Image 1 (cartoon, one colour):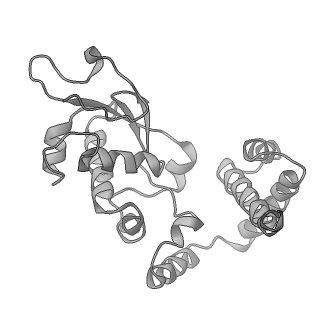
Image 2 (cartoon, rainbow, N blue to C red; image 1 turned 180 degrees about the vertical axis):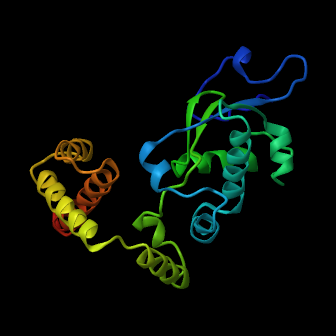
Length: 222
């Protein structure tokens, strides 16, 4: 049975990913560079990921991301991944059907935006995981939410930087209220000389804040 790892792709038999000589399935895996997340994010092997991302992603997905990171550090240009060998090495069994544990784990990587399909057998993977978004943080038990808040509090920036962040958030919210989308808002903040990472953070916050404010009104509509 030919395995379709990317659920949105429809490869021909010649593009099935199996080597005619070995009848094994291979997957091309490359790094997914992201200047913002690569700067503020966390190594998949870090304590942050093990403590806070693991309960959200699940152990299989976390271990697969760690495996990708180790392999891609050794070969930054990309790797040819033996799917069956990798699945067995991670304790995900030998089955390679679309509903098998390994395929579901890959799908979970993509669903959480930790990886992205670039073709039927071509996967781009993040080497740094972003800080937990609010929606992910709410999925943690209260004890871990408290630990996360304490950890973030210890990393609070200096008052001058925090003041700049508040200013950026106010500007971003004003732009969003005027109808600008997140990408346009971020670009405008950059034109106003805000650091790219701060512009991204402020624009994302403004869009989320605008949606939060609009939610009661929208829910009240018939």
